[in-house]
Length: 176
Image (cartoon, rainbow, N blue to C red; front, side, top):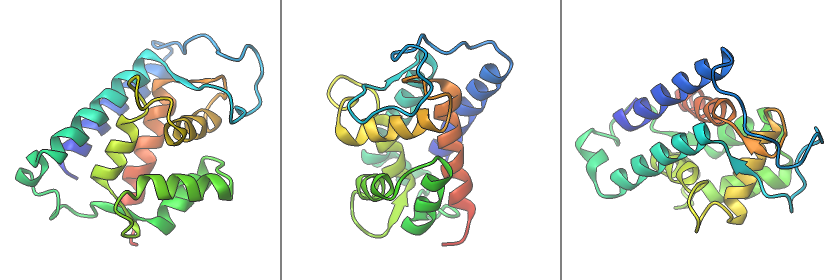
């Protein structure tokens, strides 16, 4: 596991543990008490904890894009990517429809090589925050899936964000 993914995993684990113990309360619902999955037109937002994780992912992706990750042997790390087939299975675990799986797989696999690399995954997660990218169709699809796999209240909390991130790390360890 590269230092970039290891750092995100550490932050995700801390937030997951804090959320599990009740220390971090989810933000108020953007949709009221409706417990059904978000409608595609519903704006999904990030809690402060999830925003922090997204920022870590974005910074890691930016650093990787600048070549810092090469210094840490990203290319020679074990795994380093998830096949689109395994990524589809991961998305299924979060309740993704076939259309969502196709959209998210195509969105994360930026270079269309049939694999989701650590860098592509980190960039996708990083794009879920920030004024320009958080409202994009892909970012909203990612957030909707994270929220749908959690409490479906219109706000992705740190625990939901961490669970999705950790699922990618687990998928990365599986053979393609």
